[in-house]
Length: 96
Image 1 (cartoon, one colour):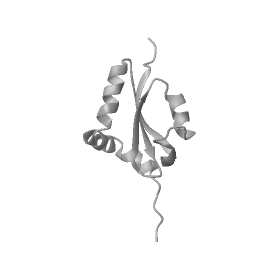
Image 2 (tube, one colour; image 1 turned 90 degrees about the horizontal axis):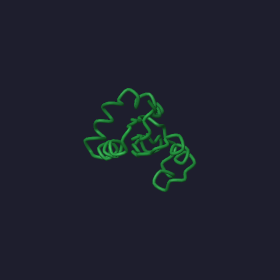
Image 3 (cartoon, helix red, strand yellow; image 1 turned 180 degrees about the vertical axis):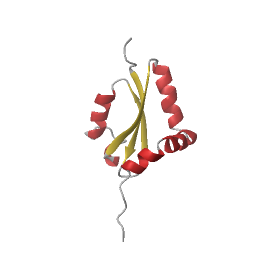
């Protein structure tokens, strides 16, 4: 069986401590577009760390998951699911 093609993904912005949530059928290419600043909505928010990705066989499932992650409840769920990971990647604040 082949690998699922469709991905709902979450990037974490080191600049503004917020998520960017998207969908793609080619995660590596899409990450490069974000990294290169070729997306208007993400270019000023770089750098990003890919923090979560879920693959699906059906495009509709990936789009539904992306839509959920963009809701307030979805973002809350992500912060709970990724609590330890976020602590690992968040920039440490300088001590006075």
